[in-house]
Length: 51
Length: 494
Image 1 (spheres, rainbow over the protein chains, first blue to last red):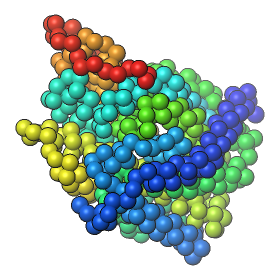
Image 2: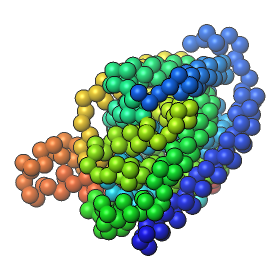
Image 3: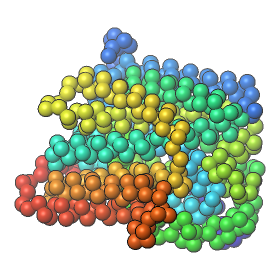
């Protein structure tokens, strides 16, 4: 492997790890945010057929 | 045919769950704010999930993998530039915090507050046209991907894409941003898993040493050094960085997520944490493209080679999860983009033509009609348009039609008190001129006089659009004479 290829593979490894770590954390915490979003926004009565 | 019954079952269950969630959430829409910006109640983790899901579609995978296939590791620099741009916006709050603090729902709305209603109409029209043109090729790419991965012919794929489009339009029209945000979250989880499956399969089939050897053999130095690669070089790097900053701060589908957030500070942090994922967002599909180069060798159709690889190396069952992930990526992008562009049409184009502000009910109705109209356009435009150069460059140059002018107009509006409406018109028109020139003249490149040839060079045209827009704003504003003080802009959050 050339030095350039090693450097890019290392950068790729860090970037991919960062992506999947953020994805895992956001998947867990995002669930709480979705619940919060829907809890604070009360359903609008009759809105199922509105507009 | 690569797809088994198990794969079909996974895709159908996923589609059914998404539709059910998207339509169920519509009951939470109470007014225009609920419809367009989810009542501005989106918190950090959900904001990151929805923004990342918006910015990753199947089209993203296809065009980035195409770059990996033709340019090797050297294109990874694009991921670093995009991550740096988003983290810069997230760290400083550049533009997005001020826009969120202003409480606008679309960017052209800011044009009216800072400049005039006519600037809003002109800016809104350019934004709408540039945005819809930019989105025009998405469906074509999705079709290429599914056709290769699933092993079906183009007719079956067209049917699948049409069904997907109807599903997306249904929940976007009914539930607006509430549906978009909630389905984005589900889609983010599924697409992340799909990306993990594809990456593990690609590295299993072509380990790093094999990738490095293939890049070295087929591409040489231009495969690892972006400055030695004739596709890139310094003009490309500067253009992509500036363009990424502009897109991060001003691309309506992304910014609408910032405008939906709880506060200007949350908006800023959403961009910072999204920036952490952006190098991976680009490099992961690029690596799939490099893997395709190592697996098949050069010379195959560049857009279809990565999906063909995944169709061959991902086992049954996981292939269904992968396709569900790709459909998730596409659906989250379509829903966010269609809502963004249709809201711009309803509020900033149609809404500015009449003497008075239309009612909320009228705006929501127009947004829904525009969403359906955009979907119809997507189903027809993508079938006949041939993409010039690489898809990546088409997307960036068509996006520059709007972002170049918008960067000058909004940044000057917020940070330069001397900016005027004349400067704004000049910036919008000059910013759109170079990309329009490229899209029109690229096809007659050979007939152009030599002195005009630079317009048909995509990297030069892209960089030129930002320079011309900035020059237009400065010259236009300085030749306007004294101007009244602009409306105050809340910069405290930035």
